[in-house]
Image (cartoon, rainbow, N blue to C red):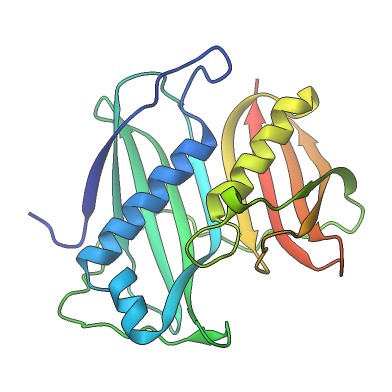
Length: 244
């Protein structure tokens, strides 16, 4: 059994008329869950964070999908690439009925609890196994910022948006955007790609302005970004790509 690849199986939630297939929000939750489970298994999870007074944050993510299943089980496989400086890369592959239906690459960083600044990861090298024989053919890159994006919605951060680090959980940004897509039919289609950069922390009570700009129509590609209303601080930049 390979120690560098971690696997976990997930039941797909029951489909409804409003949610006829696996959603982006649910899949992002699965990816977060298996990343946490693998980190715990390698001794760099929650307990290590308490001991070192640090915590992991997701800074970049790129997901590609060619199928969104409706029922059954999916298997997710994940691994860490060799650590470079203070940035860590984790890859995922998603399988349904033994066929690969998607993959995802993520970039992570450790922050100091006290000052929220980057810190060097502290771990036991004998417990952390990285994969060197294969990586995904892409990385989670920088998402462009668009100064001419149109304001399309405002929202206030709720307690249910937060995680244990008291900032908006990464999955919630995906939920905000998919909710926006469902409200505005011009963004609808078969979701094939999701990219996001998390730029600043978003906290309880923040008023967030969501902006969008259409980039192309073949395939359909739309840029989204969010700003804090009080100081116009850019919080995240994302891009959704879909097809009919």
